[in-house]
Length: 314
Image 1: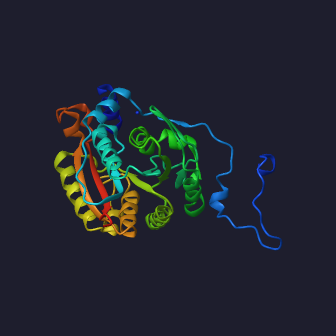
Image 2: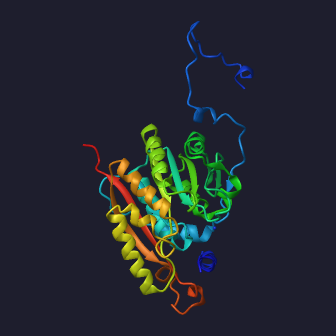
């Protein structure tokens, strides 16, 4: 059903010795200053930027035109957004809100589900993106930390082909044109400790630089409207109460990535934030189609916008 609605949405508008620089002075007998190994990882040949294969100019422009600014109380630290582009207005609204709330963001970090479970457990890229509005450079140091601390593999092909992160890149570039980006794809088979490990790494990154963390998640799949509403009520209760154990037991009837949602909850806790629901919708309401339309033969997809915020410092 999602594949059909994606088509529908598209129709509506996815070497220091050679440098000549002197080496830093180190007094005789003193050891050279140590650098973290993730910093050393960044010294490598530049790869060509990845393409935004899911971008549709007409749909994107319409989403940006219809975007609103959500009312939030405090500093926006992180959030959950859809990657199904039928919900592009919600995606644009989140990034528009974030850009007003955090115009000085240096790096936008996208954490998203890996839809192809045969490609490993965690993946990232040290390449930038060729977005429609211009190139979006990679934060290679953050990607290197994903590789070292979380065991993520560098897989440019997967990052470009999986819409869970790629679909969001045009929005990042449009609203944060001066920022860098880092992406982490997480498989549902990555293990029960992955949300905690990911949240700890992201929290450490947040202490080192000015980042916005975006968790890309679609919610209830393949159910009737009444079933979708019930699953979304259960999801809403679990996220609001930060019930990580309940979220981790949920399946596609509730969301496509319990791991990402749990990482969002745990990161919000580590950053001493509060969780707010900013928006909610589903594919039936957003498409404007009749419930009997063949596009819904496999059921609906639902969407939430959640935000992790903390009070502004006085």
